[in-house]
Image: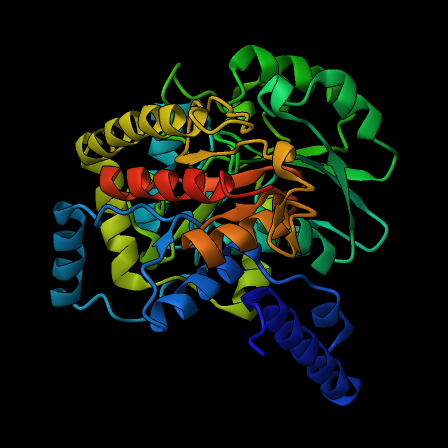
Length: 421
């Protein structure tokens, strides 16, 4: 008798879980046992496994630009190599890169971070980990606006603090309001964490919305605000507004950014923060014991990228804007799927609640994880369940892909959803 792929997957997962915990009694820490695997990386891994079996999988699970790094940035890295920039760098980053970031903050964001307030790390993910390990103690709380980037929750947990989630839904285009924020804040709140443009929804908080939200904490000077702005340059509507530009947050806002999305430099692993100097110094101390400074020649190229203009970035953004319209139109053709209107990033976050409870043979779609499993195994399209981002009943689809891949992926999804009973 042949077993369905769903039964096989369940059996394998159970075996791995048992094996992992058998070994954990002597060698695996509780923090690892209590940590969830990144759902985006997991789905990408499953997609690779199916591809290795010869399946034609379209992977729309990862948040990675499909564009190559612009040539002028690559040439700057090559020159840095030729010039001998192959040695250790200062823990917080090369002085010229920190200055370039400081200039960028002034030019693009109306933020006055000096070079001493900037820390360059091995990606924005490390920047967030540095912040959590520097600022949080067991018992502290972090208010996270959901849907949230998948790693926020686990990074805060790793520090021993408690994530407090503010939930939203598609009816507000996944944006929280001041009343929700106020209800989540306690005397244990250490900072508020959110992304705008948002991963996974593509929603962008306007200046007016952020100002209204932050009024809630105007008099709570002990609460910091951490804004992840990695998708800043992929904004399809009004100019990006940084929450740190609100005057009363001048010494309380921490801005996280990097080069992965706007410059298509994911593999270069460069992120950074602008922060109050005492926060920057704490992050430098943490980073000095974990990784030290980031890649030397990549930092040289990054400094060049910030000073060289945004022509290539604008071209990429315009392509994403056209793809957004394409994928929205195609998904809106699928009966039962409710589609949001993302105004930034390169994701769409449809509500698929109408498909919960439907069947594919003996397989019942009980939740968004089952939905994504069905689409991967049958349609061979990799997407990510919304529950990984704190919003069950939705899915995240990346449209950082060619028009042809988007059209084919949506055709496959529509075809296999129509087979459900």
